[in-house]
Image (cartoon, rainbow, N blue to C red; front, top):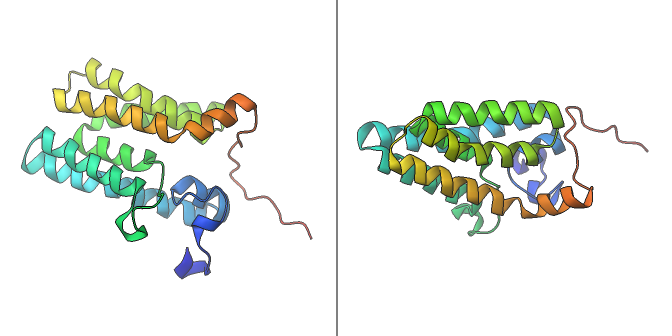
Length: 179
């Protein structure tokens, strides 16, 4: 956002560099491309490693992408994003049906409740069950459990706000600025 708008996304909205904060702060025009890039950075390495090596290499590559999104090298390993879109991309690359289940769960929960955090948590928690139910190899099952735990841990503050009744519902249109 700094290059396009002259603003540091880490200093606006929630301070998170992920797609949800970008969308909330700058709208769909910037949020959709950021989401696509977050998904792609999980998808590409997981898919290539799975195709050319095996599922274990795919989940390791997907996990590395998630770690890189959470603590980006280019930001000095400081806070990055909450890994949801990158996690989704990794699962679409390593186990497309599991990733599809997670995506469908995210869409349904988000459409019903309009809380990106709740949709992210519920979708992440659906991954281990989907992986086992679909008979995925053990590395995918283990990765699903670890990824679900990671998303849950990274959403601790959101869970606290949900319990307090202060979590923000997602709005598709930015609020009008009043003078």
